[in-house]
Length: 126
Image (cartoon, rainbow, N blue to C red):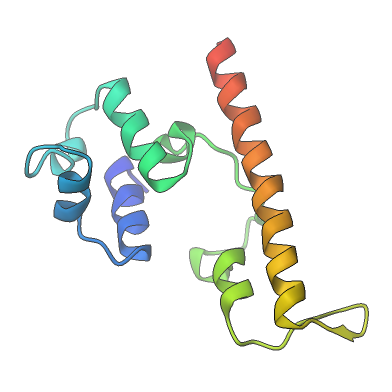
């Protein structure tokens, strides 16, 4: 998957077009499309990563995936979407009500935020 493909996938997952992302970021029209054939400036790459809440390493395809080798993109589940869904959930045989789902989501946000900051700090040390 290319840099542009990752950006397109992120935009699609948020119901946005590439053009609207460019507008939101104050970029000229077709600016992101140019990334199909040329490398972006680091500040522009950081802007896009911050916009989508991902790392620049993710956009560049450098982040390691913990998914099994047989897993496809269709096999992955976005935890946020899952927790917001109406799918019945439980833990150790106990049903999870909406209040508990909210608490679990808040906890996971903290865990992922901490991990994101750690990776950002590691990148700054290089």
